[in-house]
Image (cartoon, rainbow, N blue to C red; front, side, top):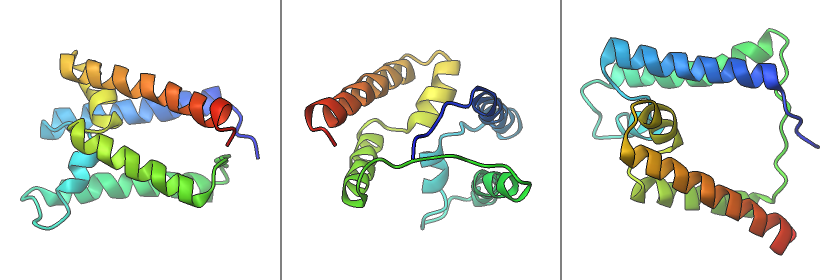
Length: 141
């Protein structure tokens, strides 16, 4: 299954992600980094866990509501489950050593012109491109 580019849906998703990040900063003074949000609901719980649960439920329920309204989300996973699990492990290690994830650095940090986040996002993008190149053109997976 080939995943096709959907510019209008992509634009709408980007606007919603940006809007949620701006609202979270305006209302709670917090950065919408998913790793940090999830870390606050894993024991020991943060004192501010209720907004974290609400944010995560919104991230989970929004696509469910979209699908139940008749929308479609085309996707394809062109790799095996073990390779997908290995990729998740590598991302988890990167999130730990990078002190944040793509949502915290790429969406919120770059918008705040944080030099650390700009460097982290450039690193994400460079290594993503290299990884795709190696997996598709060197290893042929």
